[in-house]
Amino acid sequence: MSIFGRQFDFMSLAKPFGIASIVFIVISVGSLVINSLEFGLDFTAGTLVEVGYSEPVAVSEVSEQLRNAGYADAQVVAFGSDQDVLIRLPVDDTVSQEEMANNLVTLGDDILASLSQGTNAELSINRLEFVGPRVGEELAESGGMGLLVALGIVMIYVAIRFQSKFALAAVAALFHDVILTLGIFSLFGLQFDLTVLAALLAIIGYSINDTIVVFDRIRENFRVMRKGTPYELINLSLNQTLSRTIITAMTTQLVVCAMLVMGGESIKGFAIALTLGIVIGTYSSVYIASSLLLYLKVTKEDLMVPVKENVEESMP
Image 1 (cartoon, one colour):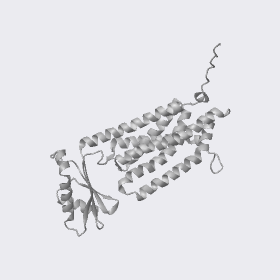
Image 2: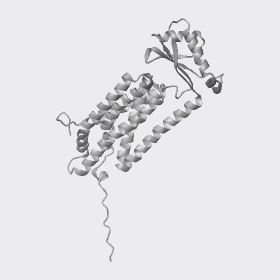
Image 3: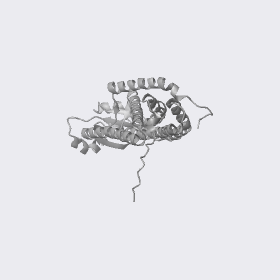
Image 4: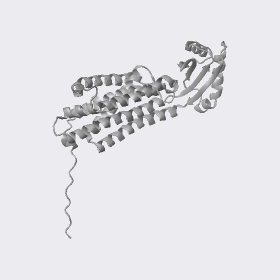
């Protein structure tokens, strides 16, 4: 069904939107090459200490106290509220990983004692973690492999259910979604950790679900409609699925926005990635996946149901 009582000519904007997507992909890839990603402690080695204050505290004040205490390389960021700070300490090459892991509690106590000097606020350690270099490297490799496996499975599934041209268009759209999301994280220096990786996998699932709904309608119209060019039939299919696409995106986005506002710092990266992914994924279903079908010159013959040969009845 159409929305607002009118039909939209989506494919008339396929070329300018395609050019815009290519530009954004180039910018994203350039940022990933030059700036890389701001990997969190899940992928890098080091110690993480979350300290809670009974009253508001300035990040600059905490950083100054840590420098005076001998932690010159410590990175301090606000965490959720003005009463919580997150402290990241890099790996000390002069100390073995086993020793750092064993002395983790002692390190936390030392930091707490250093920060307690000169303040009347009550301090508490809310989180204390250590990740070794090997663990971080393995997590990064496993995460990257997980993304590639997910894309490969999607390509095989779409090729079997629809046709190879549909599979290429779907995977290209998914690459578009992932690269743009990663590019935004790189451009704005947002932290990339395991929760963001989980969000990327969720984005792949959400985007391919939306794309398959559109593809299913395109296939149906190609098989049922006797008249109409691929351009017209794809436009018709997009208009027929538009209301479903908008409603699904809006209801999902409401939940994700609630997570972003109320979920706290621990899932902030996850919520940001999903918020971006829903918008980008909805856009790619219309202007990347569907447009690529035109450029791949999909035809009605590509989607014809194979005619089974009659089996001659055996003579008695």
